[in-house]
Every structure is written in structure tokens, then in C-alpha cells.
Length: 513
Image (cartoon, rainbow, N blue to C red):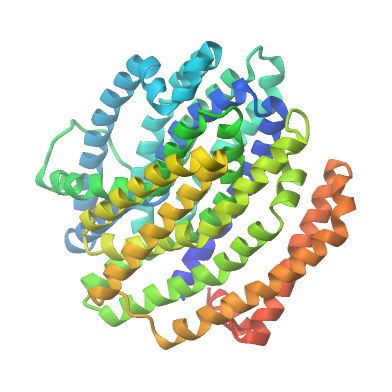
């Protein structure tokens, strides 16, 4: 029940962030469309966005939380705070060196991350300029990651989950107040990203102070505890950020086709909505829960938490994946097709979204399976699996790109996600760390059945409402919202009829909260 309530807190806050993110992306699409400035800014934004996902959305927690929680329970708050301060100092020193190196080498790095931009010198120059402005965001979001991990270990999930809201609000402010006055909207947006990092850091610093866990800046020292953190953290960061690494690889290949970077980006933004609300939220709260249970020797409780996490995740993810696969065109059309975003862009982006939807359950399961390794201080096994997944992504994306252009890149990312999920799940099952219980085995097929019924309702509804999607923005968004609400209602009914989930199963933990 605590797991459900905590996940609801993170998921609800993330929902607000993603809604604001949609507003931001709709405004970005209208302002810069899918042209050279858009491609350059999206590549630049991919850098801090990748690190935000790796650090702030649970991957840093994979190494830090078990070690911090162990010191907190065994040695008290003072010792745990000292460990967090030492970790922050070493992390900050390393990232300062990395940031300076990237700023200097950015013109050459851009040939690696966006090789297709070399054919357009202006786009290449914009990408370098925008990325140099955005990249220092990494410093602030990394410090924010430590603060978030500390608060998560204390059972305070709201502040860290709310930090991305600051990013979206700041960028929306830049779009409203700065972009109209700027000669280069991409540069204005890049400065918005940078400022957002400072605001997020201040927000988390205040939250830590209120929790009685303010972190002071110390001289970097490689203490035994920090060395242990690094030995666990480097593999954990890579394996935890596998999704973003695969998307970055996709961006590199997509730069070879005009407009492909933007199409994949906007499709990615849509499927990241349920991924953030469901997968990341459950993964963030599952890690400290598993860590506490395993340290207490409560293996049965750990198994129950793992099973319920998967059950809740699939109960929410499968219908979301079905919805994105059934009505991708309507979603993209209503949200983005205006200004410089054309009907051709809608067709291309909706195709990418459909393919990503097939991989959505895998992306979520990766977030749910990984904490089972991290809680046992095993970050090397997920790293090996991540390496296999990256190899699969590179090979499949390159091959499929030759035949299906940008759609092949989306397919490669989806194939890689399912490859990683299969490896994680099978290894946990083989070692007895994940044993599906009767309730999970009974409800997963029923969830698929209820989702299929909802998909049929959505398809019929979208065809009946198709003329209404051509109305002005507010009207079309309202119609799309009504269709989504209708789909949710249909799914709830099908869940009751099939037994995939009962009303009491959802209401009980909320009432106990």
C-alpha cells in the first residue's frame, strides 16, 4: 500500500510535469517547426535531457540510495549527510572537468552526435552554439539528483518529482516572453534550459533544508564510501540510462535524414508521458522499498513488492500503449499540427509514435526490473545487458534505416527495449529474485483483454469524431480529451468485467493514505 501511495505521489506530480511538457512542445513546434533551427535545438536539448533522465529519474538512485539508506539506518543522519556531501563534492569536480572539456570540443563532438549536420554548415553551427549554452545544465541537474536521492531515501518523493515542472515552466516563460523578441528562437530556448537548471537546484536545496538534510560543499575526497559509490554508480548510470542512450543513438542516425530528428523527438515526447508517470514513478519508489526489505531479511515482502509493482505498471501501461498505437495520428494532429508543423510532419511523427508504442511496456518493465538488481548492489549485470541492448539498437537501426528511413530507427529502439527487458526478467527469474505469484499470472492476461476492448472503443470513437479534430485548437483539444476520457471509462468497465482490476483494489490504498 505504501508503494502504491508513493508511486501515486510521484506519478501525479510527473503527470503535471508532462502536461506542462506537452504545452511546451506544442509551443516549440509552432515556433520553430521541424526545420534547421528545430533540428539544431533538439540535438542541443537532447544532451541535458539525456542526463536529466539518467541522473534525476532514478539511475543515480540505483547506486546512491542503498548506500545512503544503509548509513542512515546504521550510523544516523550525521554520517549519512557526510556521505552525501562527499559524494556531491566528487561528482561536482568530475562534472566541472567534463563540462569544460565538452564546451571546448563541441564542434568536433557534433560530428559524432549529429553527423548528418555536416552537410549544412549553418545547422552545424547552430547545433554547436545551442549545445554550448545548454550543456552547463548538467552541473545543476546532477547536484539536484543527489538532493533528490537524499529526499527519496527519507521517503519524501514530492520535491524531486516536482523538479521537472520547473524546467517546463521556465521554457514556457521563455517561449512567451523571450522568443518573440529574439532573432534566433533556438538560442533563446537554449538559455531557458540553462536557467531552468539553476531554478531546479534552488528548489531542491530548499526542500533538503526543510527536511533537515542540507548538504554543504566539501573538498573532493575519494573516501572508501565514495569509491564504493563509484564502483556501483558508473555501471548503474549506464544501465539505468539505457533508454536515453538508445534515443541518442537514434538521433545520431536520424541526422542523416532531413526532419527525422524532429519527427522522432515529438513522438518520443508523447510516449515519454506514460513512461514518466508509470515506469519512472514506480521505479523510483520501488528501489528504497526493496532496499529496506532486503536489508531486513524480508525476502517474501520483496517478492510481493516486485509482483505488485509489475501488476500496477502493466495495468496502466498496456492500455496506454494500445491507445498510442490505435490513435497516433489524431494525437499528433491535435497537439502539434499548426504553424510550421505540417500535415506531412503529422504523418511521419504518428508513424514513429505507433512503433514506439509497441515498445512502451518494455520501457516500463526495464524501470521496474532494474531496482531488483540495484537494491542488491548489483549494477554490473544490468550494465552487461545494457551493452547488449545498445549493440542490438545500433545494428538494427542502421539496417532498418536503409529500408524504412526514420521509421527503422524507431523500430530499432523498440527492439532494443524488448531485448533488455527479456534479459533482466530472465536473470531475475533464474536466480529466484522474481517469482511471479498467482495474482500476477491471473491478471496480466485479463489486462491485455481489457486493453484490447478499450482499443476497439477508441478506434470507433476516433473515426466518428474525425471531422471535429479539424476545428480550432481549443475545440480539437477538448474533443481529443473527451475521447481519452471515454477510453479511460471503457477500460475501467472492461477491467471490472474481466477482473483485471477491481474498484476496491485502487481505492483502498488511497483511502488508507
